[in-house]
Amino acid sequence: MIKRIKKIKGNRLFVRKGDMVLVLSGNDRGKRGKVLKVFPELNRVVVEGIAFMKRHTKPSPKAPQGGIIERERAIHASKVMVIDPKTGEPTRIGHKILLSEGRKQRVRFSKKSGETLTG
Image 1 (tube, rainbow, N blue to C red):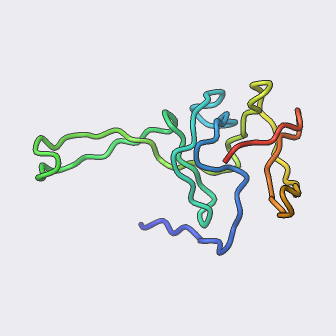
Image 2 (tube, rainbow, N blue to C red):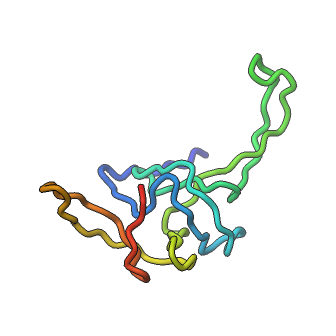
């Protein structure tokens, strides 16, 4: 049976590539990691060192040995929370518009400390 994932067009996530996040639920609950990939249309993120899956591969020119390869799989974005760079605690994310040199710039900020997030 093939599992179909409904794609959501134009979905915006609060998480970005490079963010440090805390896993809220699942087997890896309480672990922290860096976001490697973001799939906004699927509402999923890949976090470094979290949710490993095993893949059995045949020998090929790339991997002449073949065998079992472990790698991270995508988890739902609602299961992670961004870590505040100032306090090191999980926080919600807000957006605000800053005027810099006559240009409007939309930035993300931490709801706990008010500090802007890079990226």
